[in-house]
Amino acid sequence: MVRRLDGAPPGAEAAARPSPQRGFERKWRVLAVVCVAVFMLLLDITVVNVALPNIEKELHTSFTDLQWVVDAYALTLAATMLNAGSLGDLLGRKRVFLVSIALFTLASTLCGAATSPLWLIIARGAQGIGGAGMFAVSLAIISQEFHGRERGTAFGIWGATVGMAVAIGPLVGGALTTYVGWRWIFFVNIPIGIACVTAGLRALNESRDETHGGFDLPGLVTLTAGLFALVLGLFRGTDWGWSSGRIVGLFAAAAVLLVAFAVIELRQRAPMFDIRLFRVPTFTGAQITAFAMSSGMFAQFLYLALYLQDVLGYSPMGAGIRFLPLSLVSFVVAPIAGRLSARVPIRILLSVGLGLVGAALLLMWGISLHSTWLTLLAGFVVGGIGIGLVNAPLASTAVSVVEPRRAGMASGINNTFRQVGIATGIAALGAIFQGRIASHLSQPFDKPGTVAGGVPNWQHIWAQGVASGNLRPPPVPGLDVHAATGLARSAFIGGLNSILFVAAFVLFAGAILAFALVRRQDFVASGPAVAPEAG
Image (cartoon, rainbow, N blue to C red; front, side, top):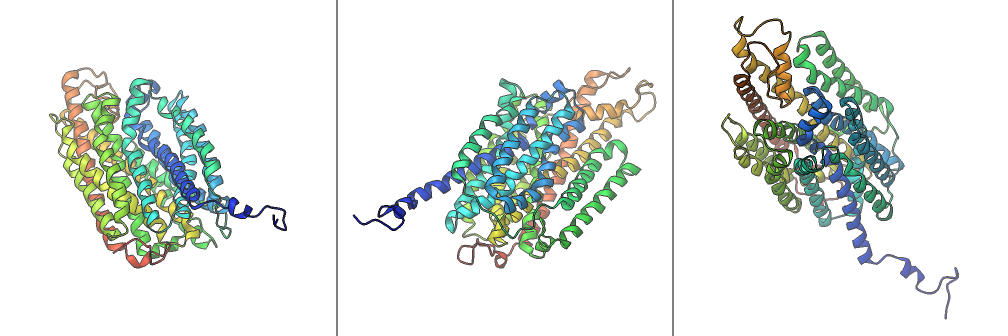
């Protein structure tokens, strides 16, 4: 028997080399781990929506508190996404991914144990930081494992996961809230997080960009502070007055900080957010698409969930079930869109998808006091088709306009725009929603003497309550409770119709810009042979 010089028996090298079949199985295991983790973190964007009335009752929250419960997660997710992608490029994407899952799981435990609105909001912010690490490197991990047509299929599955997680969140949240309590919408993440870390340690390969410049503290501080000032100004504008010094100061601070962030990134040798990428029209179109979808559609879930429960009277489980048409349709369409992205121009898929979601919101618009949930059904179905058409092609576009070594940064930027869209969408739509409600409630009482005096700010308190779904009026002498409750229902519906109408045109504008900006020649990451058809 002939032995090799290193002492190993003949054929040892071939035996140690993984077979094509084993390699095939491993990369699909990688996709499974990434998709389960992404499903978990995205589920927590919408899973709380149907639980908000229960959270409000148990923790005695205000309307602004309810908005922050959703936005604290989306805002920290957005603000730390870019640095998370940079850290993945520098320290290793596998390492950042697994540490982030551990942080997310710990923060979920703290959310479930919350005893006050502030505790819950801070824990949600910590969840967002963990989610940023997972989300920022997820597409880069998939991109390094899959190539050619398989990449389109993998991105299609990832897109279906995104659509399913965001859309099915109300159903999962409703079931958990109804049967075991709202705290379990967070506690359920604990076993999932542990399983993802365990599987990821075995399946994932490490990858990094050795030339990356590293952690960007000035950029992180200016971006976080700028986004916080912007969202806080939108949240408090109705209460403090849009022309008040505090609101003007917040918006001015947001503008200065975000401009400072852009200047800092332009001066960096290896920026976490390369502003110069916006010179590429397709890159700009991808960010506009992400922002329009999130601010126009996903931000609506908070208000639609309140409508289903507090106006129509459904339980959390009942409200979640009524979101099912949206989730099922988007789940079916997303993989199809992933495969179509190799044959149909990307700009067609993105613009048609955004246009369909805008049309879906107009189909829901026009809710009346006598409407049932079926008024929303056509919009849910059309919206599901639109979401499915956008998610997978958008994911592919986000990383295909840069070279592979910068995939982490590119996916981080795109995911940042998704979360900034949700955070600013909830804040901006909430300002319109609350302002419309306050205006509607004040109309019958404009004449002096219609309600007894001596109750300061009662209309403001009432408008805050109605916006958060509490339709009962405050105890004001001379106010008929039955008539006032009917007025509150009408005010809530009027506010909801207003934000559906406004958001529809945000999506239509996004559809036009996506069609105009996304171009075939800008796709470079996969090479001409496998680049998606951009048009």
